[in-house]
Image (tube, rainbow, N blue to C red; front, side, top):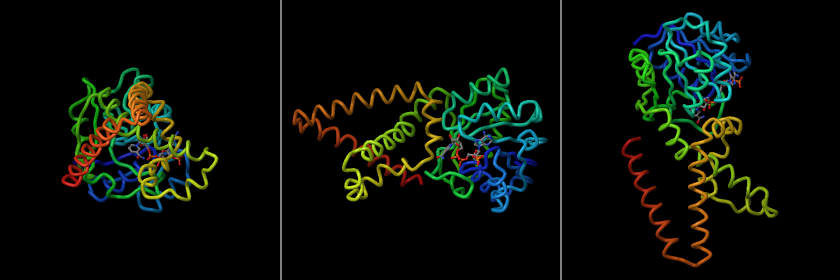
Length: 292
Ligand code: NAP
């Protein structure tokens, strides 16, 4: 696979890391960055992440074989509007948004129907940092990328986006849009919501300074992801609202029941919950270690 011109709109953590990985793989002649902040794009150019940039998004996608939209979910529709009518009719378009239903809706709103050359995607990799300076080449190595093609997605477009991600060292899997949003609500969106909520509760307690002084490894482990970009996670919670609310309701019922067990001194129920959770996490960590 050789891409002549790859346009990446949004050269931040994900867009920048993709550009770096594709450069390393040597499968693309030119990577053009597009965005709205010239200082950030100049930084991306200086870091060697992209070959050139355009502030005008229509100009950035001009004559590109492939366009990757790597902006926050709340900006997807606006970016689709800027590229509509300016991409080559045969150009393959993909995105990296953390929720897929909202991206598909945005594409429908702009293009009338999701173009057959559009392949929604989501790399399951990231850090709590943002921006091109946080991007790095190995981010997707050994990670999964989920593609959520629609029934009318062109098989050639799907194969090209699959190959793009395989060049980063990622394993590509496919699933339906709705299923993706349910799975990610449970495994990623809910944990971020809980991390933010826990830190916010603690910081608003009268003795918060005292609490943070004595917070140690457990607190750090549990709350690392509360250092993620708040605007990005606001967008994700709103974009995937139905699935997030559904898993949140289930969690609230479970945590209430655990609280009830503590109130009742029901040591068996507490222990069986903790035992089940520990066994599940240990199993997950073993699988991760065998499959880095
Ligand atoms: P990021 O580091 O903040 O990068 C976002 C990029 O988009 C920045 O270059 C930003 O440029 C640009 N941008 C923002 N609004 C724009 C607009 N209206 N028009 C043009 N460019 C715009 O964020 P990221 O972590 O890479 O996330 C990007 C996407 O990846 C999101 O959709 C997110 O859901 C998804 N994702 C993130 C992770 C993760 O862990 N971080 C993992 C998987 C998927 P400015 O300098 O102008 O703001």
